[in-house]
Length: 118
Image (cartoon, rainbow, N blue to C red):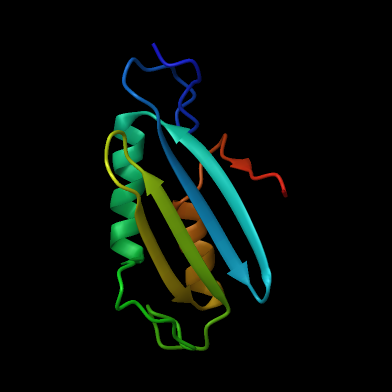
């Protein structure tokens, strides 16, 4: 049994813990939130990330325009996903204010926690 409950559904689960970290960068102020997720909710979050963000690889480049509508970029959204017993996956997108709000809302949960500053 997991020690901690799933931060998306607030239930305990018997599988290994998986974590996600979502960072929004608006100007020079990054804000990161984190969540521990059960396998089902982890899969749901990664599916949303894959639908709205680009998978980061060696050829990934930033843009001054929104990846979804071509308007001026206001925010960059990153999602780092740590599946159990697999390598980290990273996604990102440059977004206008409207699309950033939609993506951040879709990549949030009731118990996601802000990261403490180091």
